[in-house]
Image 1 (cartoon, rainbow, N blue to C red):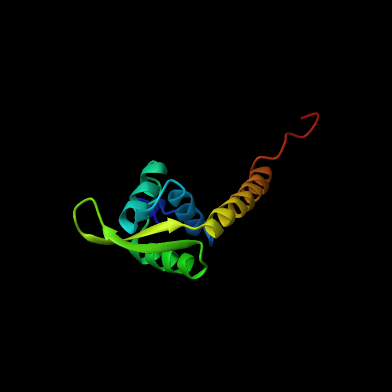
Image 2: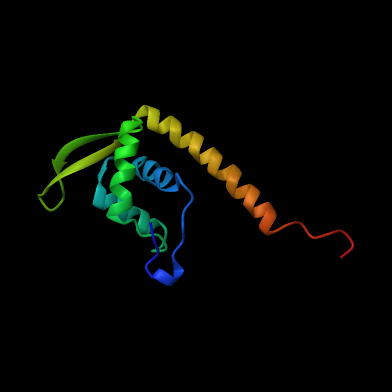
Length: 119
């Protein structure tokens, strides 16, 4: 995963792409290109998912049975694999979202500590 400009690359914590894929598939089945574009669009073009990151993540999620895959036809009449969130994946999305919120809160407390009393 990278930004549009290499100098502004944002390195993601391990597992973050998995979380973003699961969240994207909550909206319904999608093929790989559509998943990548949805993440890019919803991040306001800050995040760009490259094929070299996306497809290994999709395979990992299939192995964990968090998503399933079916053959289908894309909107431009090409054969494509469509990925779908499984019930196990929905439960994992809830768990991973809680973990993310806890982590983000902890980091925010460090970066923006409350002002010292009397200062």
